[in-house]
Length: 518
Image 1 (spheres, rainbow, N blue to C red):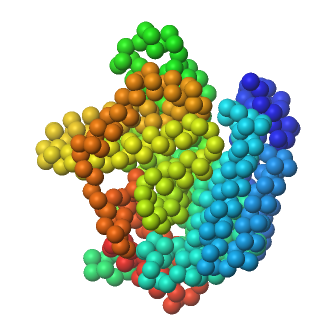
Image 2 (cartoon, helix red, strand yellow):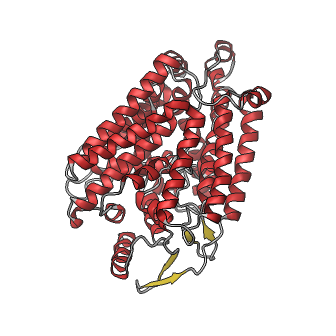
Image 3 (tube, rainbow, N blue to C red):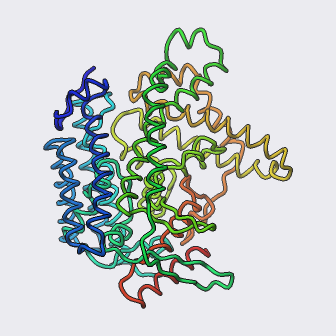
């Protein structure tokens, strides 16, 4: 079924030539334009040559232009959603604005998704305007919570990560629009913290802080900005390979074949599960392409520097959204989700899991489903994900320690858990790809809901560790976006100076060092 585009049709001849929908061609071409603009931005509008005001204005105008080219006047939704959210922050006040911003931004996104799905374009994977709105919703809600933490809550009531991300002053309207709609992230993100973005725009010195054995900080300042060229080239190579894989192999392994009547009737169970795995693996490169290209664009502009590794090599993964090797070789459900859509996982953790007063895992999966959209398949996937996550956690907590003593035994355990994880992930996300209820239930019923039943049995047999009430309620049951991921993102802050004077800088260093020790 053909889909109509809401954006420019200037590239329709190219769309016909490559046999892709024009909205997808617009997206790719605009991202490539953004890559070139990012190089120009870093070279000619460097913070040492240009004021933050000019950098904010240019970044915002370029972003809105790209949105207008891709989505036509639907791009006004980005400005409307951001503008009303900013107005809410101003008139409601810091005590309750995070709640109002959260409800409004998520509600506005949901209304747009309902309109897009059930009125215009049901079942079509197109580069529509709701995609960028999902990222803007993350930014609006994240910043609202960060301002609430920084300007209302007491410092001692904050977790280490909340304390370090807290925003201590209300942003101007220009800063707010620039953060939400800049050209580097308006089409595909990823989410970044407001503090990191402002640090980048204002061009504060790159900073390397090395923790010595005695706990003191050895702070060094770079005389010149580290070059992102190698990191950008590597990420573009990954983009090229992912796109090639998607254009050639993915189409030969459709996920829909899992519910083909003839296939289900004739294929053996091992064959069916093997095809389930390879078909879902083949569906991932389009995400690898889009997210890695978005990361490369930010890096090309000079945004995304995370410091140096132990060998002194620069790291440009401050806002990276995935780690492909860890995804493909995951040996647990948790490991897979820790490395997939990383910034969204952190957003869910910071705005929901850490703040939930009951059933944080269930609440977080429900929020994730609502944020992703209104297709029934999303809800089936995330409800199944709750079962899988709890069952995998129970097995890991009760069994894993028996298999880590001997290297040979641990290798066998890792191989078995890799196979089980890949099948469980594929089984879980089938409805996410099929979208509708009927084909999703056709798939699950053809498998006799085997992994659902197995997960329930696991939860009945193996006990889950209980959480303790109080300030450390969620310490013993860590979410799938684990504490390790959060600690890495705290560590990355050590490589940026996010303060304007020596006193506040020293305070920030102390805060982050203590957070890492915890």
